[in-house]
Image 1 (cartoon, rainbow, N blue to C red):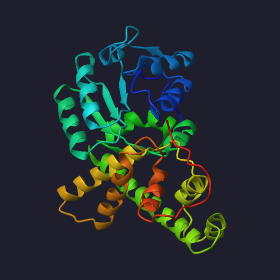
Image 2: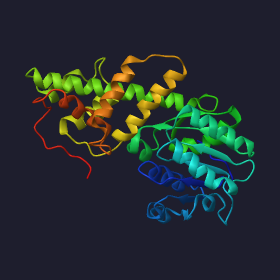
Image 3: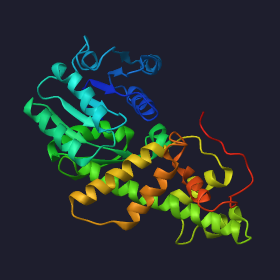
Length: 308
């Protein structure tokens, strides 16, 4: 990878579970970066890597050393992205590029694109898949929606974080992410059902998982989340509340496209069944929804590891 000779100045808005390792990688690659987070202490943790820290979104993009050329947002959902960008808008210079890496609705990404374009600011929606491990290792799958010129400008930055692919115009990054989340959510449900069936049928579910790996059933979900289910380790990575939000957005996108997706509806229903009880648990906690509708059936004998 060839970095530009003069690196653009970055503002990173949202230093959470994913934002922190992503911003850290950019700092370690030499990018000048100003960080903002609603809870300032999370952004302060990046100072050790050379980040400047701002008290407000507009302060982050207007940093006194140099105004931001590229602004990255990594926030909880579309309404928060819109709110934070609105706060930053007075400080955005014409010609700046906003890259929203949050998971939002396609309509929200398109609305943000229109707002920024009216102010002379470029926009790419670039949601990610790969979780905290992918963020830490720079191995995220990055699905980008925007113009070819804007993507070319963003690509060197995005390559520090993972593997970016332009999938269409603004808003299409979110559609690609929803496709990803539908496959992930569905596969998580199927792996949970398979392990519970193995246990209920008298087989060792860990041995069954080992036996089918390498065949057509092999997947990253079976590898990582199958092991989590066997260990009953539901401490987050990707969270139930995030997966539920994404699946709800899948159904909204399907309705907008005049599609009926019956499996997506069932998967979303399963996640809603556990959302109130374990919103911050790892998405592999979908196993708990399955056990809930099969009283007395359980995978393994361990104690559930759940976030406090």
